[in-house]
Length: 190
Image (cartoon, rainbow, N blue to C red; front, top):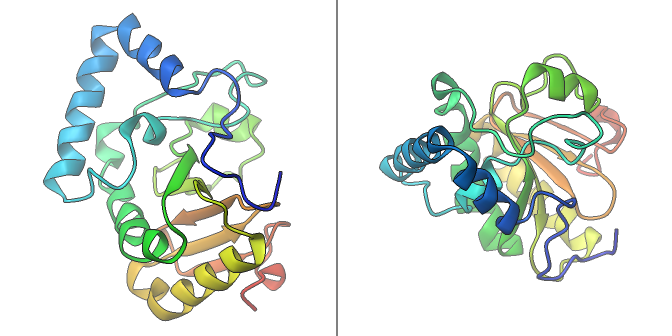
């Protein structure tokens, strides 16, 4: 992955906005679930943080796992993503600009197939994997997000993880940090 991804999407084939619109068109149930989810987020003042179609992306490995490419999390878990979205709105976007969500909720089977930990914050819809939409270098991304985590992360109960390139993870399921190998000792914030 390049240092900065620019304005183009880096989602795998099958998870673009046109694919989402086709998925919506397949089922009145999908449309109703998305409408209710969107309304829920709007009522909590986080409906404008990221497009809904990105928040229902499942995993970059959906195809290899024979899984759904889009899925609305169970309603009882919707509240879990609110604090994570608030952190993105209040801390991430002001520091690095707009971001794109590549993965959010993963059901248990998809999470396991994707290599997620059994207690992954994605399973309970606390988490998102993101990339900047603009041209942000990895070093700048790390500096800005590590500062945000140190200054405000505890108040959001924020987990911050870094992958290769400019892909990163945020969740509101425990104040912690880690690097590309998944260990706290490898976090570039140390």
